[in-house]
Length: 242
Image 1: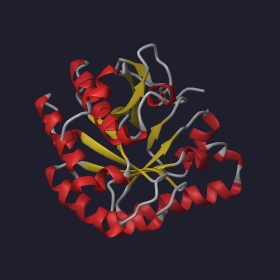
Image 2: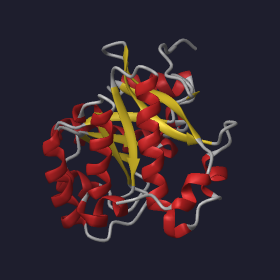
Image 3: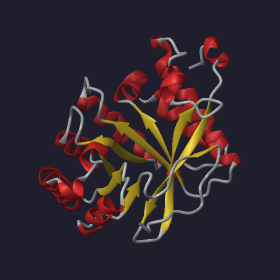
């Protein structure tokens, strides 16, 4: 698997956003986020990529993100985004290559969290589950991103049995004053608790949202209220004060 030459001319960098465990009071992972060389948005970066090269470019983002995180002294976990299609392609080859690149930078497989976005339709869920179950033998953790907003829903929990789910930020937004969202978030948390799956609230932007989620029993958080992404840096602190 080689990277198309046309992608080497695209200039980009990364930001790293902390994921925090409030029970342990520490940062447990950083999500790799693509940015332009002057902190431009991901959309600006991807607008330079031909659609047929999206998968290869995603892989390039992950590999350079791993290298940058290692150079910054990563000591916890690293969260990397994959689409279901990228995992189905060549039966997990992109994930295997990612693990290999991480190990070259002294980042072990058990430090990698593979985030599978739920915003893309899964064409073959049984095959996806089979591939993931083989890949996780290496020690990687599996997270379902954008949970509650996408295609597969609860069937992903049954068939893949992820280590973590990230509740979609649209369910989190103003959850403190929205009854239906509160009911859904509590239900997701209770189901995952019964299944032994960690629940992460992503996109938390206000103290009020955080207080409701904390009372609901959620301990893992990501969002601007907790800590903003840092460009080409690993933030070492977070703040839960209003």
